[in-house]
Image: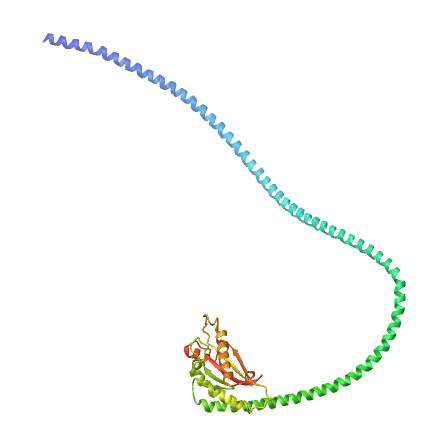
Length: 349
């Protein structure tokens, strides 16, 4: 027991000195840290104090710069107003300069024209002076000519008096001749009217005989003063040759014409006109280039057959009208059939 207690005491005596040393060292460290903290706090306070001074200085400089900026802005606005006024004045001066330049150009052109006119006036003045000199030279000869002309005028007046007397006589003769011409015209008109009436009588007789011969047929009819054959009665489509059937249709017509022609007096200058007509559909082949050629060829075929039947050639005429005088303006086959025709008309030459 005593041994155990002694060992316990020894253990207690050995621990505390080391613990105290550790505490002493810890205390020294803490004190050192406090000293470092105190020194850092001192230096930090000093730095913060310097920063506040620098910040105050910076604020002062900013305030000065703000004042300078405001002053600069005021100066800029003043300068902008002055610049705007200067630009306006410059534009006005430019306009004035342009107007002055234009006026100067006009003045230059007018000056050139004036120089040209002046040169022309000088030339005219020189020409006038030259003409005046020539006129003075010729005035003497002109006076002599005036005297000769005066004598000639007197002679002409005498001749004019004689001509006036002859004209009076001629006017009276002209009036007499005009009266005679008017009377002859009246007689001629009466004679022509008489011949026309006489020819109309034979035309009526001719068409009356044809109406009796032909009878009531739709393809052969009398329209006014014309005797109308439909083309299909005389010609095949696109052809200008008369067949035997077509000649049989024409024989009574020419027989009646020869019978009536013997009765017409020789002083009536009549003619049977044969007109060829086609429809509006164009034709173009080796034989006929157009409807003009086809209509004329058909009319000529009828005229040739008429001369072969004894109708005098000087009493016949052939004309081709193509499709330019249609009876029916329609577009159907019936209209085309009516427009394809041969017309015979007994008329004056």
